Length: 348
Picture 1 (cartoon, rainbow, N blue to C red):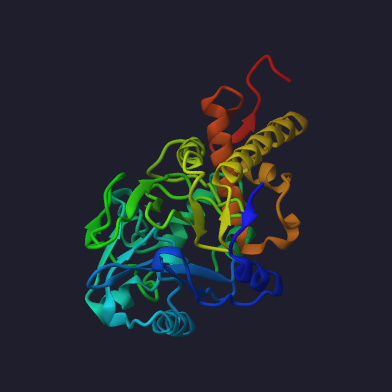
Picture 2: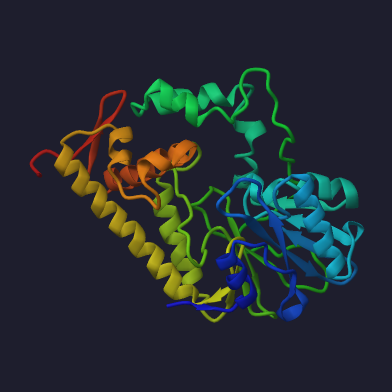
């Protein structure tokens, strides 16, 4: 069991409101930044002051409302954007990395991330036509064209640049590196799974672990297939083992609310994925040789399949990651292109 330490955040979550700016132990500040049109509602950015400046972790989604919330949070903490000397990104999803470029422009701050996260930046991996690339991947999993059109309607197409390209890092943080913030110990912990270069950050003096999306109090982060990583689910499960050993620290996640009980939450997440694997094997046994699309449609999700909408692309990707994990362990096999999933010969 976990215990909620972010009481005001928990109450705001229940009311579906933006939580307040809060000063935490060690002088760290929690700064909520809204995410437009998202069930996640907001990113919890963190201001970590040092001597001669401060670092912002995960500045949030790039929008006028997001920037206003971030700068208002900095002001409540007695700072302006000009006081920010560095930005650390746990991973490059837009709800974390979106405002890094604007904050760097306003302050001259450096931007830091793990090297494997840098290598997944959209400008490096998607090329000029991310929609066609994603559509081609979905077709390999039997997704119907009309479903593909609906899922990818929000993505840029040929000659359509991203509204605000996600910026490249100035500083690379490997596992165990200290963030270059004088007067403060803030250590990078590489926790791949949700993304290849996801980082958590340990602040031992304040007794906290900034968990990004790796460990959240209620939500299981999406673990989908990744072009630069084999078996991302295995990487995620191994990363959970690493943070479970930090159970004496309070968890400062990037969404929802602060909590204590990292070991218990990591165990619950491991069991969630074990149950998902058991469910997948059971569905494959019942259906015979389903496509990835059919398999995903028959699994249990937080909402009915018909209501998931464009997030079905994440559901297919997560299903494929679990199948990849099970294939590596000899519990399933795939065949053909487009691929179908079945039990190994001699099982049933």
